[in-house]
Image (tube, rainbow, N blue to C red; front, side):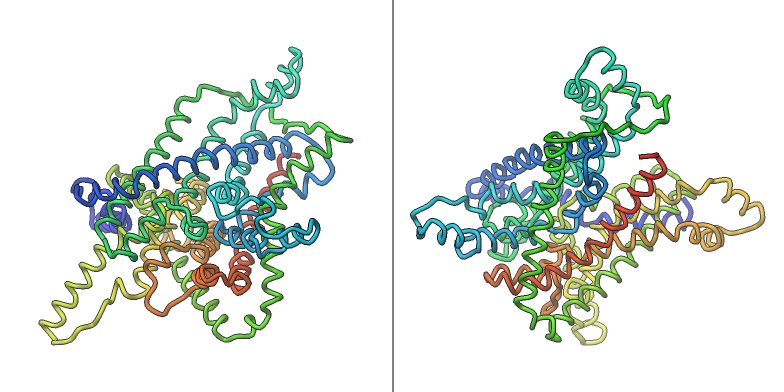
Length: 542
């Protein structure tokens, strides 16, 4: 292993350091801490997490698969608009959606106020569903996370050969029976992947759970760390949550491995949509538009109304300082993360050794790990390193530099790089796969070095994937809440933190402008994705 490869390996392991720290805590369990946690909170965390996983899994499957089937198989009025509108909830972070529905459905909200006015009742005279509950959290997560299932499953349905459906109908199978016996088994791996992504986001959610008062691992880790100052307890809880995530990943991969349904794309014809009219068209349209209305239209309208009510916030310099902090932090994190992804991906392309591939795979696991786990796993080594720097500085210069790493934005940038490197790696790898290795070989025969090949050949060809990765990471950083809450420097806020603080203080209208700004920026990758889907539809002859 040469020096360049060794440096790549070291950087990849360094990026995976928070996960290593959390995982190693399992090898040194603190039995007294674990016993206390098990006697008090862990059963409740596990119970609530299992209920959330089960209910959200069913909800996103029903919403994602039904909408994907309608869009890919039927022609009804407005289906083209609906096909990309179904992606819009991706721009709405779950915690922001939770704030908007609380403002709408709480006792003081407009919905219950209208009920009291119409039926002349007062509090205690009627029953109304409680949004701040476990079922409310399931509802919010389902309408926000179903696009993961919709997007992947729709692509699977579109790739299925029309011959299989025509054969099934020739044998007398109805459309419903063809769906259950042919389409659904073929799409099962894609559905499993989409559901797993949604469930990992469920386990990683902190803002919704904290605001709704639901005790799960993410809220427990935060309270253990900040509430009672028990760093070891927070690390042990993080390890247990990491086990949950790993089990989820293993189940998803086992599900795909066990799939034994194959298809042959002997025909290049795209699936022919069956035209619908009358009540059937109305049902298909309702199935597709309902998640859009619940997951985007209603929350976005509420945010817009709050922002109009609090129009003076847009004129305050403090708000634009927050916006500037969020944008420059997100842009800097995106530049660092994309540069790391390009370096690692290109290094793996040039030196595909097994240790390097394993280290880069470890570094790319961050997106599957909750931000709160990464933050806790990062604080311990950074705090230790800060103490060593202070000791050496005081010994050599009689000067205390303070917390240079754990007390500055360096810790945030490190956490963001760990959390979102996977997004950049996948985007850059997809671009590199389009560049044939023969181009590299030809350049080397002409005497070009590896750096020159990267700058003169790969970078111009990777311009679009790099830009896409930059935007995706920027938006993800703007939405990230738990890691920012734990690692932000003193008196440093972002839009996500401000929205969370305002909502926690029950000043929901004040949370409107920062939340709306986050959603507006979050629409950028959704628009990019919808344009890519539209161009792909044109190419395949939809």
